[in-house]
Length: 262
Ligand SMILES: [Zn+2]
Image 1 (spheres, rainbow, N blue to C red):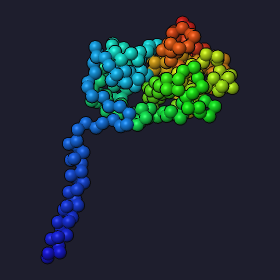
Image 2 (cartoon, protein in one colour; image 1 turned 30 degrees about the vertical axis):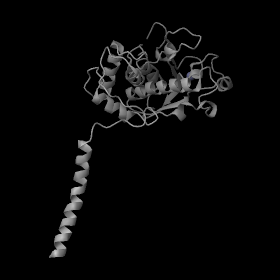
Image 3 (cartoon, rainbow, N blue to C red; image 1 turned 45 degrees about the horizontal axis):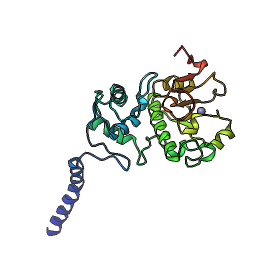
Image 4 (cartoon, protein in one colour; image 1 turned 180 degrees about the vertical axis):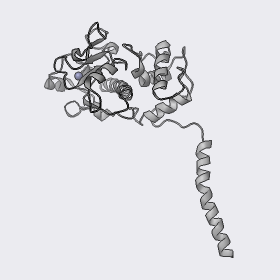
């Protein structure tokens, strides 16, 4: 009798444990992100600060057709519109306000090192075998920061293509690497500002067409010399260190993309 009672108590206690653990998780305060970044306030138009700048890095890929979201730390109409598109893409309430539901999704998408879920620093720093972001015209940290912004735009492009993998065949290139592969002398690849991508599920033309809505101001694809086997995307409009003007430039004649017809 006594043994049975003890047994029942032990069983009841064991059964109670999972429930107790779940209750504790539910009652805990809103989950913090990870080792990267945590937002502490709801952001709306008119706000400014580093938290806005951090948000802009992550939603710049939802800038809309032929547009960009400046990484200026000011929550203006373009930031709000991009947040809204991000929310729509991920099935959230689309109000253009960055609050708990938006942050929760961003936390899900970002890794501890701040890269988006489906891209990594090692993937972008693969030029001629990787160089630790050095050997280009910018400091290693500036170059790495540009690569991070490039990756968040790629994450948006990937999402808009149906959440299917995009493969980066060339990201950052040091000057030596760029010379070795015959890149343009002032290539955006030197700045960590560009990626050459391929897909196994979307045509290159589809990738190039979609990229026009994902904050990329430089796009070269099929029909443009040496771009029949990949699509090049970059953020030249935001690059104030190169010698080119801050304007949009894209060309993929075989896809109907070019000056005047996009
Ligand atoms: Zn390229």
